[in-house]
Image (cartoon, rainbow, N blue to C red; front, side, top):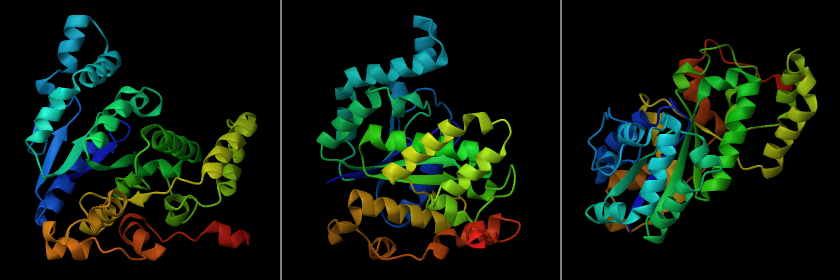
Length: 301
């Protein structure tokens, strides 16, 4: 039974770079990996592409022939692929027993309310492919309370829309404080702790004060579902890549697959076990932050 990852996230969040890095890591661990480019606008690929949607349809051709803009053209391409899903099935049939990485486009509405990608994923799972959605968002948004609430909502909506086992990733962890210091310790953002503290920061902003009730409602939605948490990731850091790989393997069941299909190193790397929170965020603390942050929630207590 084939396993794979559906890599999604907003434009510029690092999906293609992640696919290249994850393919290299998995190959090193002995897995036979195939990368599928599902972005018809992506013409610069840093990885060896086994299946390319551009062979079926491209945004450039759609814009030229149908006189659509880039966003409309991308939506049309996904709808066209949905209608011609047998093309993808034939291509994937040649990749039997390979571990699949699907590099999807970054247009947010494809994962929040448009149904073509959801329908495509339902077809993939009906072909007995064990999939996990890996949703990347930029980690530097943590330094802005309003933007962090926005990525929480985007992540939650994507989880509900795609209806797949899901791993949320704070990508580019090395840039986590690019636009300012974090107000709280990194574990506040990775585990999405008590958002009432974040709400307090939002209300301190004079511009956002008039949106107090709206912010309270948005934070309440995220807390009520209690589904969103994040793995920090820097593609250049092997340890953080391995942690994401472990999380994905637990979600799609690869770790429980046939021992004969996995190398000893892969089995050891995928071993299920508890991980202390500090281990998950220590790379962020030690390498990418000027100073270890003191959790202000403890000070308030």
